[in-house]
Amino acid sequence: MTSLSKVKHVVLILSGKGGVGKSSVTTQLALSLATLGHNVGVLDIDLTGPNIPRMFGIESSTVLSAPGGWIPVTVDGGETLEKSGGSIRCMSLGFLLRDRGDSVVWRGPKKTAMVRQFLTDVLWGEMDYLLVDTPPGTSDEHISLAEQLRTLTIVDGAVIVTTPQAVATADVRKEVNFCKKVGIDILGVVENMSGFVCPHCAECTNVFSSGGGKVLAQQFEIDFFGAVPIDPTFVMMIEGEIKDEEGKKESLLDKYQKNALSPIFKDIASKVVAKTIPTPGDG
Ligand SMILES: Nc1ncnc2c1ncn2[C@@H]1O[C@H](COP(=O)(O)OP(=O)(O)OP(=O)(O)O)[C@@H](O)[C@H]1O
Ligand code: SF4
Image 1 (cartoon, rainbow, N blue to C red):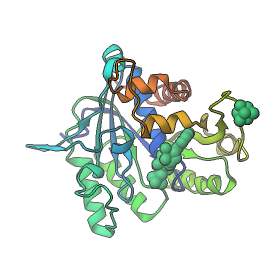
Image 2: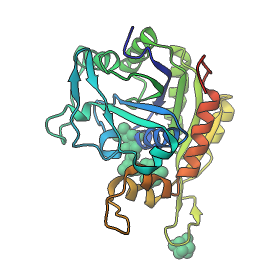
Image 3: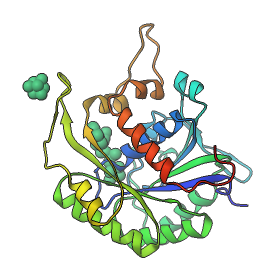
Image 4: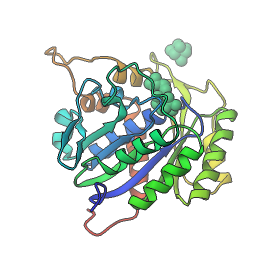
């Protein structure tokens, strides 16, 4: 039995280019799946920039070791999760770095060994979805990662994140070809930073050209999961500390419920659920 054997669905989050919002999409997707009542794991193997702990507001948490492996950190769900019955647990190299500002410059075998340990030694337990936030690109490292994952578990598929700019979409084309090469299905494409939502009137303006993700999806006959605008309230959710009327710090999930992007991500999460293969015991 492996540490992934009770995980029903494994979904990779990929992007051909850095900074397009892959970690943000992973975070939002996890929050949306959890509010739909799923138990979600997030594995951050972007070793050069492990942002996931910061995005979940759990960067000061410590990972505990138990016989058999590491115990992932549970995200504070507040009232939102109590009502939905879902959960989020998270594992990232960020938890293991002594200095949070350290950037990891490991290469070759050391990096591969660390990723393997992350895939085999985390005690996920019963889990509906494991979202794997991967480093950007399509290098040999990615091929090795895809191969390792496929020897350990069934990968349901990948969600590709892109931005509307042509350069980024050209990079994502490589990601589509990469998935074909390593035999990973593409569940769908998300176009992030598609327009800017005005904080005053909520009007959405296309700062860059938009529709690149949709065109790409049509061209490769893959599903278009949706367009996510740049929303300053999202940055507030991640970076800011919002307090309620009684001055109590709000949990991330309670903040998420008030975020303008959450309806879009709920829709994307529903599409991921619809595209993942039902297994016996699924609700
Ligand atoms: N839709 C959005 N609205 C507002 N801000 C966003 C949005 N998507 C991403 N961001 C912001 O853009 C920055 C980059 O996003 P993120 O870290 O998710 O990208 P990434 O592709 O994972 O980067 P990396 O290549 O470093 O892994 C973050 O500060 C994030 O808060
Ligand atoms: S979108 Fe409307 S409210 Fe926002 S800055 Fe432009 S004019 Fe002002």
